[in-house]
Amino acid sequence: MKPWHQRPIEIRNLFNPAFCGLILSRAMTGYEEDDDRGMPFSLALLILPLCLHKETRSILAKGSRSYFLKAIETHPEMLVGFPRRTTDMMSYTFEALG
Image (cartoon, rainbow, N blue to C red):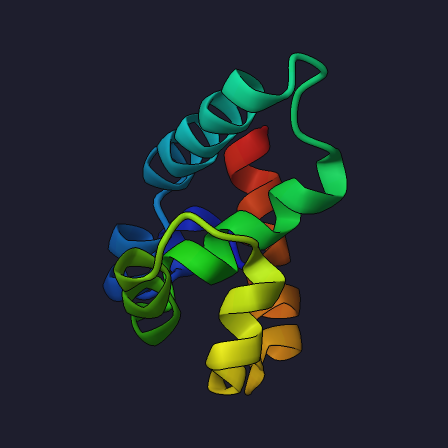
């Protein structure tokens, strides 16, 4: 990952660690309402790729609060590019968690 001052302004604005940290915090707080043990670390790595991808976010927002696998079953296009997005966002997730 490039040092902060060498990143393009768009990346600095979109993937600001404070903004990404807030998204992670809210997701973890919501998860903790259902499970007192808290969110597993592996799931935390999926939050930003799901929330910051416009098409995925709109599909999840429209649907009922059902299981993620049911959403994928009805909208398999959500998986297109998902592994790559997750890998690309991993460094921003680690930075936000820090």
